[in-house]
Length: 234
Image 1 (cartoon, rainbow, N blue to C red):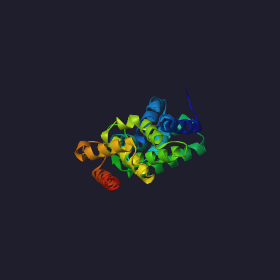
Image 2 (cartoon, rainbow, N blue to C red):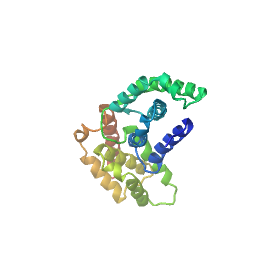
Image 3 (cartoon, helix red, strand yellow):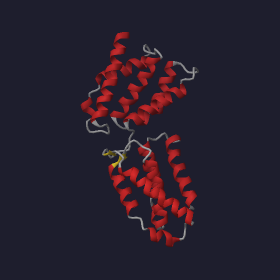
Image 4 (cartoon, rainbow, N blue to C red):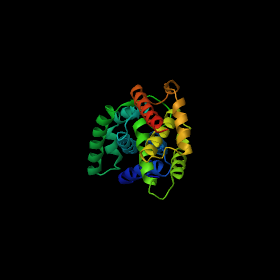
């Protein structure tokens, strides 16, 4: 199926946000799934390749990190685009062509300076997952749910992520516990279970996962602070 310039931009972004919102995926997984949807269409023409690679790159530069191999691939693709061939395709108006080239130049510079992620599996990044748990907690904490129901909903929402990597599980647990502590929900059964999990956590168990050393240190500080507060209460 052939798509117009505007349709490509609309559909690619729509696919990405559906994975994010409907499928509850991390940025890294959502962009990987989106790219897989359009990968074959990049072979249709140089114009298709240019539009898709630019649109994917523009989403990527909104992330905190980008997978190193994907970054290298996209930068190479953008750099090697044949502008004369795009003109010869006659799929774009002059205005669209100018807009595309301008966006390509801008996103290439942004992509070039982005921090690289060297962990190959799809997963949440540290700040991204912390923010997402906080956002979801606030979203469901409307006064209509009991403390136990809130915990159940949060753990259900991030159930798949907690089984993906230990890093993600611990980030979910400590962020959930921080929010429960703010509301003084410290005596519920699930809080005690989370506390036990955090007490048993050893940072050496996540040395080979997605968190860099600085993020591991931040996570440990949060855990130590939380456990100290809980111990003072109990």
